[in-house]
Length: 141
Image (cartoon, rainbow, N blue to C red):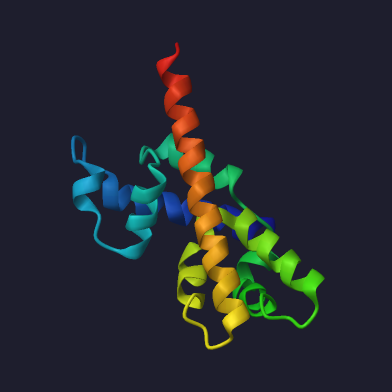
């Protein structure tokens, strides 16, 4: 299972390097797809070292990544504790879960849609808070 994570990190670095590898190119100007939009919204650096560090810090179990759709469905579980667990796991997945959560905001199950919306909002708040804190710290050197 760990080999899948390593493969994902290598693949992500390769793909992101292909998108943003041109020296002097502005990442914000090159954004076109949903994955690139997530990177832009998160205000991530696109150099290889930063991307590898980000992916290592945000890698989760293969089971969670492979069964993201099950976590989304669990948001509508009749058992409150199961719904809470799914919300917490999806929020912990952060940017990885965003595309699936954004799609789930229009689910016909109102509980899934409501919880997906709340998860997206929490992930975005967390992302902005981390970026704001990082910006203050880098300016304090």
